[in-house]
Amino acid sequence: MAAEFTRGPIEGVVVTPLARNVDERGCLVETFRSDTLPAGLLPSMSYLSLTEPGIARGPHEHRQQTDMFAFPGPGNFRIVLWDNRVGSPTAGSRMVVFGGADAPLSVIVPPGVVHAYRNLSRAERGLTLNYPDRLYAGPGKRDPVDEIRHEVEGDRFFADFLGL
Image (cartoon, rainbow, N blue to C red; front, side, top):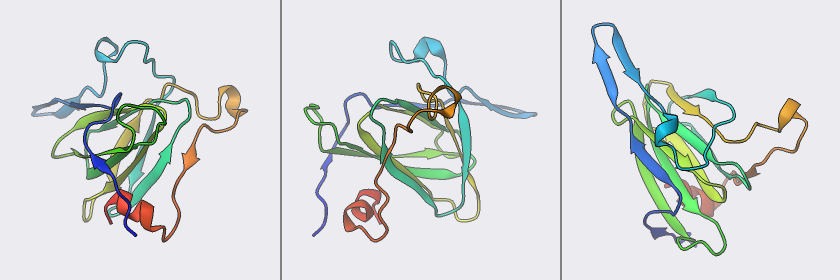
């Protein structure tokens, strides 16, 4: 049985195109500015990840953490989000956006929104930056990790979620 999702926006998810400033030296992309963030969102750390061609990361969600991803390139990604929050006005909604080298963007993902992304590039690693508002495993990495992982090998629901 295929999973059923409602297409549409998800309350609290913010997708913002990123401007690429290019000159003879290369390019510069502002991945976020504090003066354009939603009120109260304060990043606590940052990390980058390189994702091999064709590989997916996620799906997972956080109980308390808001993720603030930037997909500036290299690589192009299919980003899938699903509102798993009980009582949310957009509960059950699913969004798919594309970002990366061809369309740099940032995506703010609130707690309770399941998210995953796949590098669509055929031969190029994809770069992703994240500026979450919580420290991974808390101060000194002594707390439980705020993450609910949904990767289940062969699970049709999540294969549908990722659009496989």
